[in-house]
Length: 294
Image (cartoon, rainbow, N blue to C red; front, side):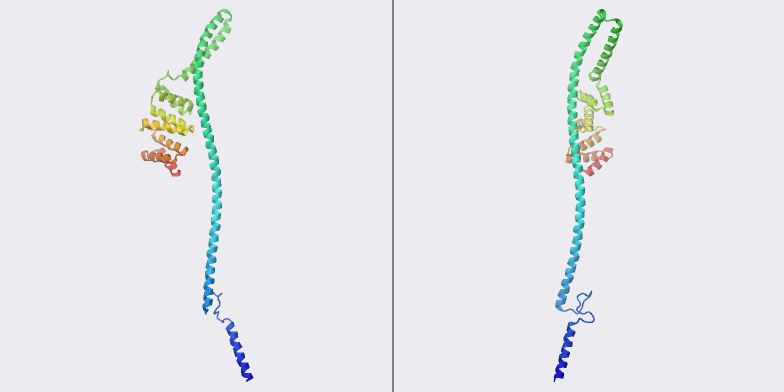
């Protein structure tokens, strides 16, 4: 009886040990690439395991994307900081140009006042010269020898000639409008803008070629960076005659002037008008490039 009980216990122990060991062929192994022979709980565990692994892979990809975007953002911040520095310098340059324009305006006003004052002074000098001439004659007769008188007379004549030459140059009333117009364009080509402006302003007051004269006044203002004045002259010129050969340039410089003062919408309209009206002109080609950047 004892022998039978012993054998039974031995068989039960062997059976229990067999249930604890994994199959020799990998059944129930969750770490296997293709597990099989799984129980219901093991299948749930395997499913959750694979879901976690997929989630980890997705999380890793997201981390890589975040790191890449962070590096891009750092690069963009560097670019933006560089552009901000350039914008600050550009704004500083614009303020300097505006200050310079105000200085030019003040200088022009002072020059006009000086010219007016000089004109009055020269009238006084003319009278003094006449009196001086009479005095020289008197001195020659009574006090001065001939050699000294000749030197004094020579100096007087040189001064008189210089004075008359200056007055002749300053006084445009003695010239015809055609001559003034010719000389005004010569002065403009030589970039003597202050003198050219005086000539063209005289022509505008005389109503001689007012469209062209206003155009040149606009060009002078444009080249001096006085864009608001340039726009006013250009509009006046175009309103007087819009078939001139310089119209493509007038429209282009009007658009650029508007862009420079910050009126981009109006600038865009003038660029489009120029391209539409004069599509084959050099000004239209420049307008297309500027419009693409606007």
